[in-house]
Length: 446
Image (cartoon, rainbow, N blue to C red; front, side, top):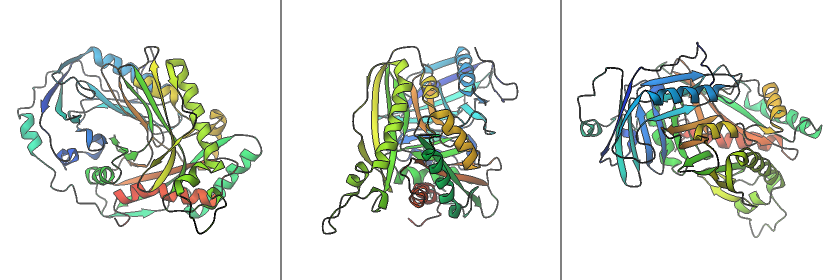
């Protein structure tokens, strides 16, 4: 079993007690997050208004390096042995649950994290619950869950005053970076590489950035995606890396993007100006986007195959519609064939061609050389798992990460580069993808 890094900051209580109780919860779950909590202690997993929100920290582990997933899973296995769980709800997300986010690269200075919140409020398929956690000899909270749920955050709709500045690579220089990547592809070094850029945002008055209002705007505008927050990483991602529930495995691949209402030159077939083509048809007819998507689907199928039977891989993608963009999408499904948990499946899938490239090791080396930044936990797995190992893990896209000072953050966007990529179009694609976080932070008008 992998040993934990002594400097990882693991918190493993001698005893942990977990109690999930059915409750009645209506309205926005995010409204229950107290305004005064540390923004890095907020956890969120929401889609279409349902899911989970929580806060506080009952247990935590930070890991890094090539064994970061295995170290986190070893810690989770040990935590489960000291957990006393009273689960009167018994649905996906009740009982003992940990939330995690993992660094994209093994050499990242940003530690990966798995954390158990003190309070978790969940709602799914018409059923709602509250999970509370105490450690060692702590008493149970004196207030009833109904009392806690009656309190709402009066500042949920109040955004912080923020200002944006250039990131590691200024936008004006991004086409140059993409051009260098295309040159590597044309030289035969890699088939595809995914490059990302960052933008910096800070609080005008130096205060901590409050995450609940940001999450509320993301959840409202991008309800069909997974709105998440784990240890200061927050966003709304459309890409499900892997879901494991009752032995069924599902993964959604997104690669190939077009702006809604845009007319990118590289994607447009020859058509009559009198009969404009639906942008969804332009997307599925784009050689560049179809090539990029095929690489990503193949990498996921190859990673899932050792763990699954009945693996279904559709022959053609469909078009996923989001408020700002269209994506090419493919949903793969299968049945788990071994004892893999959702976290170990996520580890097996990371990094897919959708966030790294092909071949993986060579693409990762090009990323390190050309991006000029540490991605941190951007484009790494983010999600949750329960005591049985089931759970959801997405890819951390359309997101930002709070700095340790809580008063600033970086927001990220990237795109897949293949031989047919146009550098100026790739810059435009990153600007479109930054729209989600810029809107949520109040940097764009609604």
